[in-house]
Image (cartoon, rainbow, N blue to C red):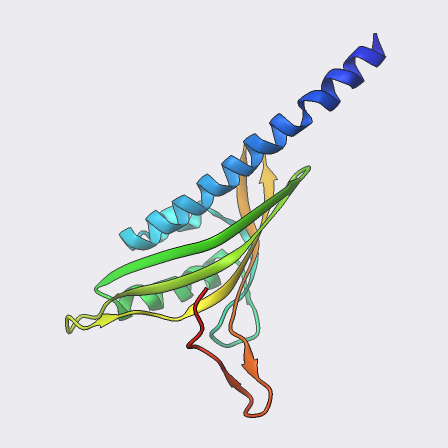
Length: 158
């Protein structure tokens, strides 16, 4: 009997992984929609309370959901209308952890009406499954650095 349970469990593992990947991608879709709606409370539900974020703005790390949401609040005050795009997203799930990486870009319209195309960044998201949902426990946004000048390179596109 145990052999049958192990065999079925092994056979069904890819289906569970596919469902988990779809759930993680759905959570990232929620992030995109919350950013476009400028909805901090919707974003709060996607981040773990103890999220650690390595964002493009100083300091080196932002610890906790409140610190992460402060960064998004700054974006919301700078832009009248916000857009966010993810490209080339890859998601890998193993057990109760998932990692997604790709390229992200915040763009939008300023209060003056001027359109801002934004800058593409390298984006990484680490999720942990809590209960029946996935939350972001770590994220990182970065730009490549020109070693000769020490300056970030912000004109690259995926």
